[in-house]
Amino acid sequence: MKELFREQDFTRVAFFQNVLEAEGIPTFIRNQHLTGSGLTEIPIPEFFPALCVMRDDDYETAVEIIRSHLVEDSTEEEVEVQCLACGEINPGNFAQCWMCGAEIPGS
Ligand SMILES: [Zn+2]
Image (cartoon, rainbow, N blue to C red):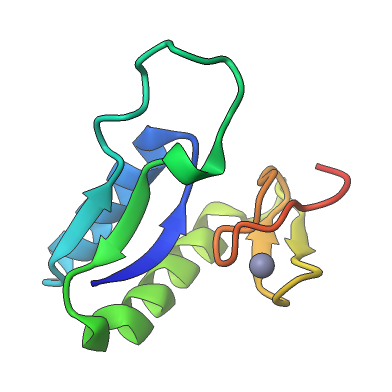
């Protein structure tokens, strides 16, 4: 099992799980039941839902699929920003790099 990305917003994680499952890639969401507990208002990245691929071999393919969807989603109005930590392109409304989780300045 290999983690693809984690995001505070569970709906986004679930969305990409659907996308990947539709492509025939078995996935698993870690920390699915830890969010929404209302225990804390402080976002703790360790507890964010994390989308993982069940088979490590699917990792590269899954990244490509997610990337292509992000590019499609971020046309025109959205500005793309490049992560300073890993160089990945993110939609401008991302506060964190979807790839490595680093904070994106100016978002
Ligand atoms: Zn990054």
